[in-house]
Every structure is written in structure tokens, then in C-alpha cells.
Amino acid sequence: MPPGILRSVMSFDPENYRKDFPILGRVIHGDRPLVYLDNAASTQRPRQVLESIVDTYENHYANVHRGIHQLAQDADDRYEAAREKVRAFLGAAALEEIIFTSGTTGGINLVARCWGDANLREGDEILLTEMEHHSNLVPWQQLAARTGAVLRHIPLTDDGRLQLDALEELLGKKTKIVAFAAVSNVLGTIAPAKEIIRRAHEVGAVALVDGAQSVPHQKTDVAELDCDFLALSGHKMLGPTGIGVLYGKRELLAAMPPFLGGGSMIKEVHLDHFSPGELPGKFEAGTPPIVPAIALGAAIDYLAGVGLEAIQRHERQLTIRAHEVLGRVAGVRIWGPAPERKAGIVSFTMDRIHAHDVAQLLDRQGIAVRAGHHCAMPLHARFGVSATVRASFYFYNTLEEVEKLGEALEQLKDVFRPRKKVAK
Ligand code: C6P
Image (spheres, rainbow, N blue to C red):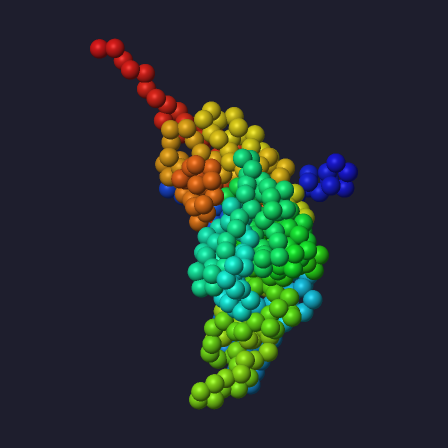
């Protein structure tokens, strides 16, 4: 490892950031310090983001894009400044390419409806993967039902990597869109996004990246990726719920009909027809999530201060330690690739103990993890399990917390140890 990297790995101290997160100081079940390992479901928010919410409501709040009074101008400026922060954060070329949505689900549905309905015909193919979240499966299934398009899937290896050699057979001139998660929310698998996008473009397909689990944890540059669409959720990157972003290449968004109809998305309205407005307003009908968007801007400022490269390196350390620690607990099976090939998500099962019981017993120790199918039922079916336990990290987690997880699992295993039959 080059000395520069070694120094920054050594110098990254989550304690420098934990103090900004009031909730991380919470105690659970009376006396257990919270160990929050459910970041793939939703991260926590630093004071700076919470203060942005209060400050906007206290000092700068009005509806946007409607008023000419001072407060409305103030709110407009702040809302559009947040869009500029997102643009710069993602490396997008233009503000018109940044659409505020309700979240990743909202963004993918927008593309499936607007781009999909306009561009897909019977027999066309939609290429997904076996590791997708339901948000990147169901909208395409609905689109296929509406249009007669056919769904295909990139398979997974037994260790949870995408089988890219299958692309040879899966991609062809019928393929119109390839939509995939850059990071799996269950296995932590990091998809070779750039390569998949390049291969999609070679056959004339567009590429959509589900960035819900990647954008918060690794540097994302849409220009470098050359993706056509990318969707993300604010609440998974220190922002509030109810806000997300859809990035789309300007020419694609411009050609797409609007999604929702209503205020703000129009140029003119008559009693029997309307003409749509310009980007990005065309896709932001109605009063948008003003305060969450501004707070997402504050979250981006915070993340930029921590540094995405540093975040990714620290999470890699946590993941490597989690594999070591869990690997020592008899009966634990970790799903997905080796830690070097994945993001900070470690899903596992335990012999003889249901995932929900594991999660409930960990909760008694103050450790918050998620158990279940994590909105990825086909992925679980692929591996023949109905539920897994998932520990997912963010930059404010510590190696000590990972150790605590291991210790708690050791204890839990003892509780469930089969009792020897006592002869009567
Ligand atoms: N995954 C999880 O616990 P929304 O709900 O729209 O913010 O994000 C949906 C979504 C889409 N794609 C991926 C890869 C995701 O992980 C998620 C959200 C959470 O895994 C909640 S189900």
C-alpha cells in the first residue's frame, strides 16, 4: 500500500464525526449503547443536516418557483443551490439533468414510465440482474406487462458476483435498456458499472444505474461512468427521507414525456390540453420536497468534508474486520463476495437460528441490524434462503462496534446450543 494511502487509513477516525450525530449517543433497552449497523436501510443525520431543516423552516421557508416576494426568492435560491450541489457531487454536465424525486424508487419508476412507455415495443428486451432490489425489478415487470417487452437477467456466481461472460449471449440488438444496482443492498457486491454501461452502449441500449447503495459510499462521476440515468435516495446519504435524485442525460430527459401532471411542469395549460415546461421542472410537478432538497445539499456538503475516498477506505476496513470476526463464529455463513470485492454490507445466516431471531437478540444488546429478504426476494431465492441478517456500515461506525457484533453472536450461539439429553 502506498504510504499516502496508509497514512489516510490510519488517520481516519470515526470519532471525529460521531459527535455530529446526536442519535449515535443513544442508549437502547436501558443500558446498551446503540450500535447502528442498519445503514443500508437508512443512514443517520448529522447536526448540520438537522440544523439546515430547522433553519429553512425558521428563516427561509416559502413555496418555490411561484412567488415573487423576498421569502419565495430566498427559498428558490436555496432549492436551486441544492440542485447545483447535487450536480457537482455527481459530475453531471448541466442542472437540467438533475431531477428531484422522492427517492430511488421514484426515480426508477419515472424512467420506466416515461422513457420505457415511449421507447419499448413488444419483443424488446430489458436486461436486469439477479441481485436487484424490488425497486429495480417491479417497475420493469410492470413496463413489460404494458408493452410486451421481455425481461432478462445477468446471473450471479455462487459467491455473489455478476457473471459478465453471460453478457455475450444476453446483450443484442433487441436489448433496449440495461438497469442494475452499482452495489447490491444484500451482498454488497460492487458491479463493474463502467464495463456494463459500455457493453450496453455497444448494442445501442441505454443504461440505468441504481445508485442507492453506491453513491453514499464511493465516488460517483456520471460523466466518467457515461450512464444514461442514475437514481439515488437522500436518506441513505445523511439526508432526509422523501428526497431523491434522478440524473438523466439531457437529450434523453428532453425527449421523454412528463411523469406526473400538475403545477410547475407546464408551459401553458388550456381547458383541454397543455404543453410541458422545460427541464428540470418538467419532471417536478406539484410543490416539491423543498426543505428535504435543501437539507440534501447540507448532507452533500458534509460528505464532501469527510471525503468519499476516505469513506470507502474506512468501510473496507470495517468489512474486512466483519468477515474476520463473523468467520470465527461457528455456524455463521457469510453471503456474497470476499470483502475486497464488496461495499460495507455483510449479510449472513446462522445455523439453526432464524434471521429474525438473530436480529431480535442482537437488538437486546443494542445492535441494530436488518433481517429478512431486504426487498430482494429473487436474490434470496437464487441462494435458497428466505432471510438473511444484514450488518451495513457507514463512515461513523467503528472497528469496536464490529467486534461487539462478533461478541454478541458468540453469546447468542451459546444460547441456542443444542442441550445434551440428560439420562433419566
Ligand atoms: N433499500 C434496504 O434496506 P428507496 O426506498 O426508494 O429510498 O430505495 C429503494 C432502493 C433501491 N435500490 C436499492 C439497491 C436499495 O437498497 C433500495 C433501498 C433499503 O436495503 C430499504 S428496502
